Length: 251
Image (cartoon, rainbow, N blue to C red; front, top):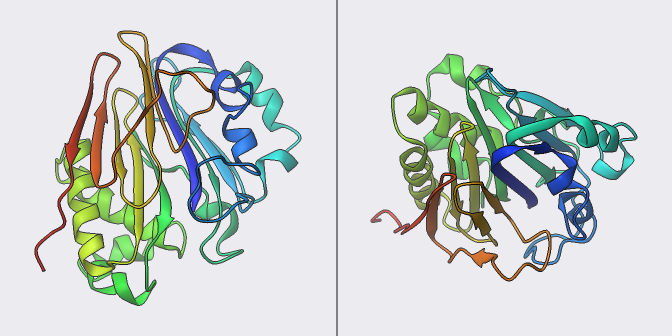
């Protein structure tokens, strides 16, 4: 149960979308408007962004609430990026792994966040965990459902899957193993954004050719915000937004 946001477009200060808006991610950490499970996202936060000419994103993460970090507002005011992903966390298991469990998770050019929870964790996803190489299981960044789900997505990305296929196939597989779950995923490589709506809110806002934003909920009351239907995969670039239904895998 978290809130997250990703954006791609012309470089802007991170704070322009995360802190400045009346209902931005900073405020969503204690007063989300559309969160269906939980009310306070105080168990960590993080932001990952892409510097010009560097395909590997930088990250800034902390274990505590975003409002308690006295440096974040300054960092967000001066750091500029064309693409970034940020999240605030309401932990499924309070205190588990601290900063290591805070999104975004990262590897190579990718940033990933999970808003939701795997029902029956950890036993429900154990069969999926066993499909991963032992080395990848031992190198999980945290002992939480989001870290395992990221490892499953990452395995597909490394095998050559596109962003949307990696997310869609992982959601269907995980939902089959743990039906009573919420799997809102957010993934970017700095050029495109892929996201899933599966059990919680997801919205997008586009200024074609200039910027696209995908978020758990709108950061303002702009009427151009569009809600993503549940059980849907979203793929967005600066010029296009594509929505496709996500069907559950046959039992």
